Length: 586
Image 1: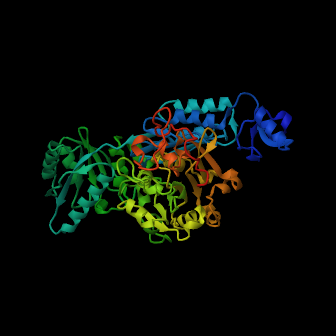
Image 2: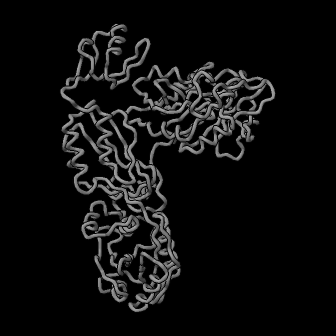
Image 3: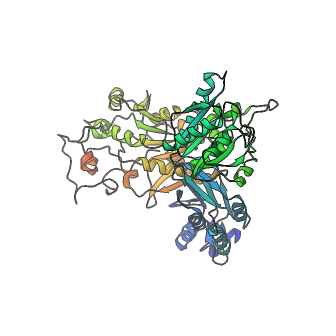
């Protein structure tokens, strides 16, 4: 690949290195230059551009990333759409994410242009969580290198695998010795039930027995008859040998001991056995603690339907030091947020990790173009106001919080949204124009949010999936800080803005939205193709209401709605000329 200044006469087929704004178009970074683009550059006065010229038949970055992702994405792992040479893989189920470390190291050593990054091996992940990212570093990659990477990805066991959790039913035996406090039994039961619930399992009512082999063995057999597929023993005295009371009870019940001890602290003294196909564990003394310990390492594999082998246990030594040490400057309990604990032991249901994105709904306008009606309060055939239909769609998305900016007829808008988990903010100067509402909404976005999606209140056909697509494309590390929906090359609404642009939005005045800022930040824009005209369709005149699907149209007495030619226009199928393009939002 040749990279650098390129005369226009030699630029056909080259890849543009930097975004260029021309009088009649924008040529984005990564555009493959054709004759029309070169003519536009020449007309704008350019004699040369910075570009990459390819030798031979290499694959462009997006194409290469998509091909490698297809080879890596096994069951329950879904690839994103390629963009800027990147494809992300996300979990389609809750489960245990397992990686072949040696295989991934070999793949990353093939060529510096091909990279694969993943979460750590044996990470508990939630549905929708990103687990790996494929990034092609330059604009293109030699075809033979990519083919080698794909062959490696398909050779033998998968490099990446997601093992969904199965609903384990566990039986717990609590052994008793004189003098033990009741609180000990309660803490072990509570911590065990919590661990199982976090992995989709449940705990049968615990059984208590004397701390002796025969009664424990009898209780094990009883739990098997009750349908327990995981057997747990919490001894009144910590197990210290394979021939101790708990392990011997497993053997007496017809089972075997497969491993004793593990290189994880706390949790060293765990004994792993089985009775037939049912795993049977003698828990260590830390079983009553909710903090991460060796129990979690074992349970997460069992819940994922995986065996616990000697090699697995040996591998857990790296990262197995979980105990806080007094001479550490910052104990783990303070240094690691509670939700991060699931990396080593799931103490609560895992949740997707990602940036928090707020949603700002502009609902403060005077609706002057639809006089005498207030467009946001018009009920559809089922009695639901337009603003309520939009907000219900938005609440089905992952964006939070949903902030509704009110002004004109504020109390009626609030009443239309009664009972919904939204935050209201008033724009006192809403009559000055759209910028006033936008400023009020952005100012109310909490500091915890990385960015905000701005949505017009009169776009009731915007769906939760459109919002999800915008959030999925947002990646400030990759320079995708502004995310704009497009269809057929035309930009629509709503738009996602990174927090770094909030100060510019707060400085806007007049009856304009944030869209004029796009021209200042071309390099920061990511366009997401949306196959739905909803991103163009706001409804701010009586005539435009005729373009709504029939079930959403208000029953107005006067003026009457015009007829729509060629039958009813359903969601996503309306002609773009039916309603005014929503060009002022953002």
